[in-house]
Length: 150
Image (cartoon, rainbow, N blue to C red; front, side, top):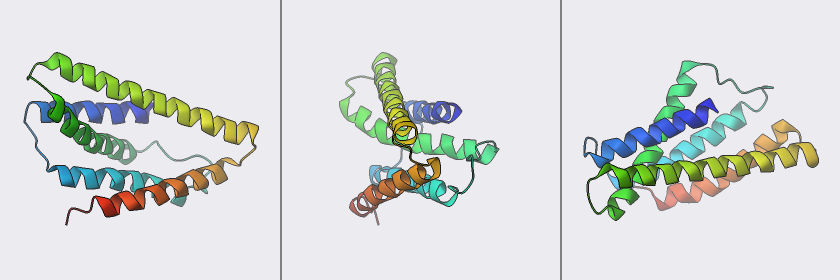
């Protein structure tokens, strides 16, 4: 739950930074970095699948999660800036809450599917993690090719 919270904090910070024009990042770089963060996470899962429990206790893991949230938040900020009609904070907060609500729904659905796969279908936790991470990598590679900014 802490990782989801840190990711959310990253979203919120980058939405605010973009809203107030404190930080501006080229959209093509952001659109390329988003699948990079997904790929790095899936690769981390694959290379650490042998461990009985993934290590989430070190500070670097938390900082990377926060940084990945910042990147994804700048992606959302691009779309928000296309839709915004004024510079008031209320629509930004509504947008941010909608994004975070959608994130919670996605996390809950993912946890439910994982629970069903591991408990009902009797997949081994390690095998399930490897399968899902491999599928994510397979879906991410075309996104990287499509968003290549160089």
